[in-house]
Length: 159
Image (cartoon, rainbow, N blue to C red):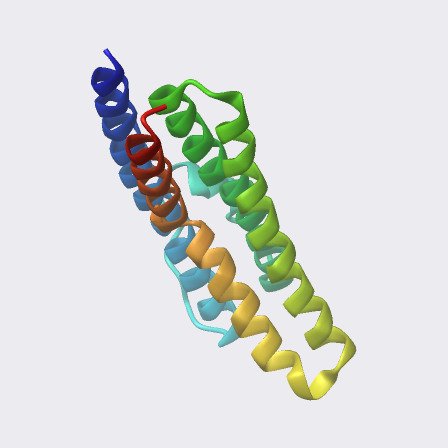
């Protein structure tokens, strides 16, 4: 039964991350393309599908939207990871560990952004490091490492 739960968690995790990552890429590619075309004052086609709700957004509004979406996608990726870990191992403490790890990486990202804002020569580097950390959080890598670490730890300690 324990192996069945782990298999279900792994399947849920894989499918959820694939679909969520594809959706995130779709949203950000379209918004980034529109923002770039607006910035360079070029013609642009209408947004596809539900993104049409942002049709009248200016360059600044699209950039602000990206901040909100980044935060929402980070929360969503952390939630999917925490749910998969919970389904696989049935321990709330591990769920909290997962959410805590995502929160920690998010705070480190914010720290680099704040340092860049406070110390202007470091701004570009701080922004790039911060963005890389957030991109990392919006992949399955943290959850995969955490999942495998928990699995092998439990296997070695027989608990």
